[in-house]
Amino acid sequence: MKSLKGSVVALVTPFNDDSEQSVNLEKVAELVRLHANCNTAAIVPCSTTGESPTLLREEWEAVLSTVIQEAKNTNLKIIPATGSNSTREAVRLTERSAELGADACLVVTPYYNRPSPEGIMAHFQELDKVGIPLILYNAPSRTGLDLSTNLIVQLSEKFPSIMGLKASNGDLDQVTEVICKTSKLGRQFSVFSGDDSLTLPILSVGGVGVISVAANVIPLVMDDLVASFMRSDLNQSRAIMHAIHQFCRALVKLDSNPVPIKSIMNSLGMNVGSCRKPLVDLSKDKADILLEELRLITNHQEN
Image 1 (cartoon, rainbow, N blue to C red):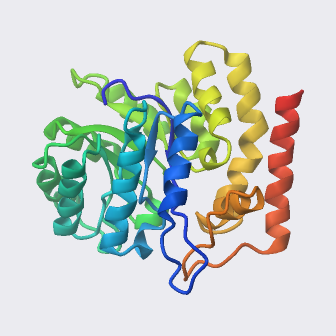
Image 2 (spheres, helix red, strand yellow):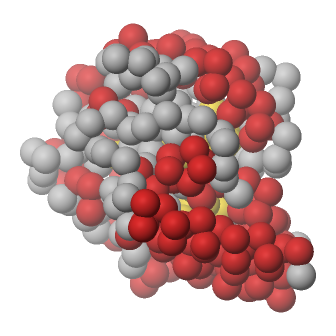
Image 3 (tube, rainbow, N blue to C red):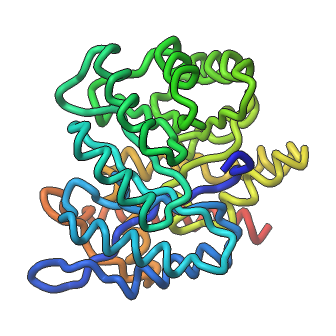
């Protein structure tokens, strides 16, 4: 995991069109094969993009087991989302992920109950005992709690299993400061953009990649964005970022994630099903906006 970099997809969870919206495990396997062939570095199943709040325990495990099984004999790393606002549940999910063969876990800040910094430290102290590499996930728009720079650094200093950060608070100053301070840890600490539209700025200050929603539909583009920067082809990385910026913004602005990304995937014939309630399908007007933004990316690639 120390060398992990590039485009990491936050995978959608496909559902069947039945009364229960059962998980479509065949489609899960198909999506894993797609990413194995598109230079995606890793897959994050069962995250917010994967509608984790609506997954039953057995569904969560079935999705993760399918992803791990299908990723065997590929270069894909598997990083399930195992966060919870219950420390006991987060530990259980993280332990089970380790047992199933995951490479690391993405752990969101406990949400809704909004623990103190001391509570956050106690939460990750328990998770550190599991022994699997952990990536912190700071997403204040989802959790109601923004990790401070000092707390991120303290967590990374105290708990050796914490090997990175998914930064989703849109604060480039903080990202820069975190990268500067964690560079003195004496071990690898990797920062990934949690916002597709901020991938290039975060790479420019020392980030190593992106945990991407857009990669569900443009995996090769997202890979090329990071890879071109890493080989110092800044003209190419800038051109890609300019081409995809509006599409990436639309994915998070038109409706709650993953409504827009599932809408565009279905429009492209990927057949991942609707979101589970309380999320509902994207309106036709908004879906048309997404399709137009994607068309502009395609035109850019052709030119």
